[in-house]
Every structure is written in C-alpha cells, then in structure tokens.
Image 1 (cartoon, rainbow, N blue to C red):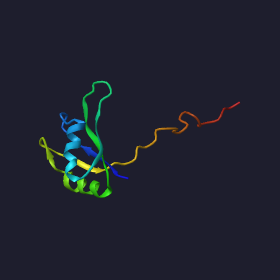
Image 2 (tube, rainbow, N blue to C red):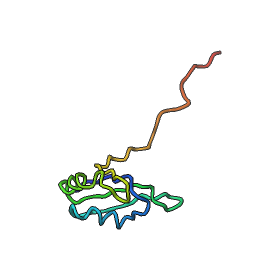
Image 3 (tube, rainbow, N blue to C red):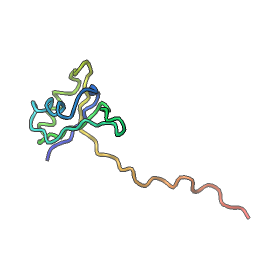
Image 4 (cartoon, rainbow, N blue to C red):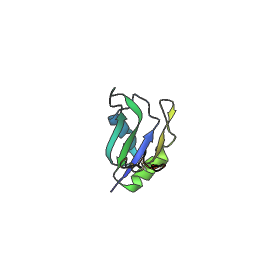
Length: 100
C-alpha cells in the first residue's frame, strides 16, 4: 500500500492533473487531488498525492519538499490522518447546582 502525501503552498493555477505530472518522476502515482473551495471552485493552495510505494513516497518528499514552483517553495510531507470531528464535550452543562 502506498503513502499519501500532503502538498502545500501550491500556486492557484495548479490542477490535479499537473500535480500528478509533477510527482510521476518519483514513481507511480495512484491519485492526485488539488483541494478546491466548495463555493467558488478555486484551489485552496494545497492537495494530496498518493504514491504507489512507500519508497516512491519518500523519494517524492526528498525531491519535492521546498522545490520552487511558480516562485513558491512547496511543502511536501506525509499526510496526517484526518481527525474525527465527532462528539466533543458537553459544553454548557455542569457548573453550579440548583439551590432550593
């Protein structure tokens, strides 16, 4: 199983297709996606690339991290798992008891 990489500081002109092309020099790319704003459809300036092997992912990190693209240094590292947004505390409860 491959590794998912976070790619940040992308120029807004980068597409998912061009992101994939950038990483092909390091090995097989399973997926590449530039994250877009839900309302405007405009790039948010970051994306994710999934490499087929762990070795290819490490080579991509070594080769792409801080590489200049359109005058911007890329940030490339292993993607962290998405934190669950469920539950949360019982805000508003607690505090002082009722006085009779």
